[in-house]
Length: 128
Image (tube, rainbow, N blue to C red):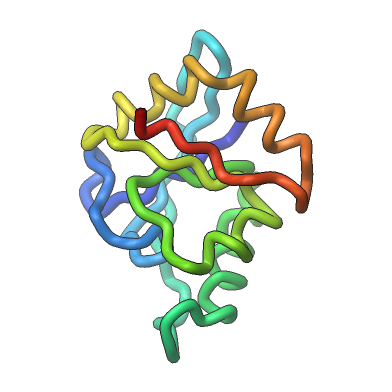
């Protein structure tokens, strides 16, 4: 599964909404491996208003172009309802990206199950 981690520094998740990240660091993960793929700059347009559908569309398009299947962060905004139709939103309480990815690896079967539900999927909450 290819996961986009919302970050400003490449080491930590930020405390803002997923769509407000400076970068998305992409990782390919399986149950026992995690491999960095690339960093992409979030060059989507700024929101015209809170929960702007154009912003959600821009983020999804940016990520889907690179085969992203899930987004991992500490905070999603109201656009989570739009984003989850295209990619699986995963919430973590971890500060470090490495720790967040380890949690996803440990819950990969659950994540893939949600991903398989398509537009009917829900977000995955790993904040416990």
